[in-house]
Image (cartoon, rainbow, N blue to C red):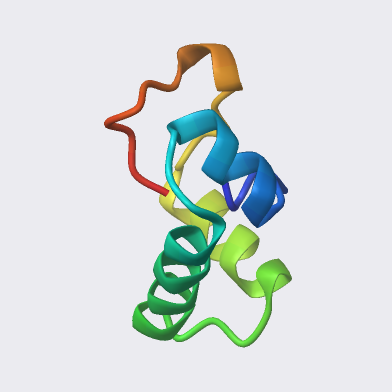
Length: 64
């Protein structure tokens, strides 16, 4: 959802968690992937073949 350009508030609502939780996960994701920007992360995801999923295909157990 991050790679798809969703905002923290949108992600939190869609997966049923708090915005703060999403911020923590997003920060950890950026750090672990060593991405300096969202554009870097999107480039990495594209190279890895990670598809952008629509909200309709995601469940509450899906990961960021």
